[in-house]
Image (cartoon, rainbow, N blue to C red; front, side, top):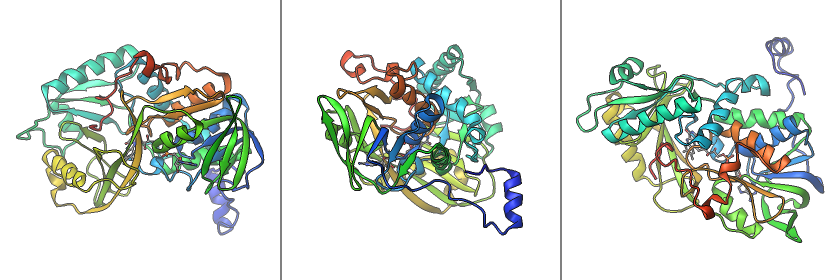
Length: 414
Ligand SMILES: Cc1cc2nc3c(=O)[nH]c(=O)nc-3n(C[C@H](O)[C@H](O)[C@H](O)COP(=O)(O)OP(=O)(O)OC[C@H]3O[C@@H](n4cnc5c(N)ncnc54)[C@H](O)[C@@H]3O)c2cc1C
């Protein structure tokens, strides 16, 4: 596969762009693979990539029932940060954020990573205490964040109203190297790199059954026929419970719709990401000029990729209080994804009761930011049986009561 470069663009310009190749191949499935990953979202593709890159395991298939990146990876608001409270979370989210810094070069694919800074507003005294505590914890964890004053907030975001009548801005937790990336490009970049290593990404291939022999995985049944494997990774976000049931075990996750919306494009007016958790809403401006707004999660379990209408009204109403200038903006599009949430709002990266089946799920409302770190750790777990990044996130923690409570850091009320 040819490398993308300025030279390649110039060469193709001279020959009317006739020499570009497809970014990834679309092969028919083989009868057997060393590893099958179910789910071609960011986490599944990143796992496959690091299996090949870090462990030389390339006889890998990634099976996707729809199109790659068509799940939550292509539906999120693209916020990247690592300002979590607990040590295991800080470790995996910071690993991911650090990998994002030069992932475009590593994958030879422009992910449009934009470390423009992320701030989480404190609008109650309770939040002030909580975010100051997180800033101290992050200092100990080696994660660079800081507590900033309302005046600094106003300097960084001139369009914000810091003197709101109900919830004035009392300060913010600020991560200067947090930001955004182009979500589809993350999936596409990993997919292209996997394809370059000879892996098979098989779209429109739904897994309908999981076969076991003597307590071990033997293979999967799919809409393209049966495929055998030595190891299987379940990386299907909102459908994790369904796949776990096929494999014969239960998961402590709930699936709900989470939604987002974008406005009509306007001139650049905000060059950082702002999260306002008390009023509940978060916003950034895309390169196209649209205001990208994160909405709420449904209060009931469901599999509709849409979300309830009242959230749109509540989210926009809340944000208008903090950003009065958006009151006359027209909203263009709204959509939803199915997020998988655990009780402690932390992910599961774990072996399972079935030998050689591994599960990566439970990223809930915040798993885009963690894609590279999750793929890195989960590939290590699948290849070697253990990973320092994943250890604390095993399924056992729900039996042993070792919860990693991140319900505040999650950023979305649920
Ligand atoms: C509206 C919204 C906003 C969000 N905002 C942010 C944010 O700003 N920052 C952040 O960090 N995170 C955010 N998230 C969360 C983030 O998007 C997810 O945590 C992350 O994308 C999960 O990636 P994944 O690869 O695990 O899942 P997905 O991208 O959903 O991929 C799973 C794939 O598995 C496939 N699949 C399911 N069942 C089967 C089957 N039986 N056979 C084959 N394939 C199957 C699906 O089709 C899907 O493509 C947001 C999510 C939503 C919905």
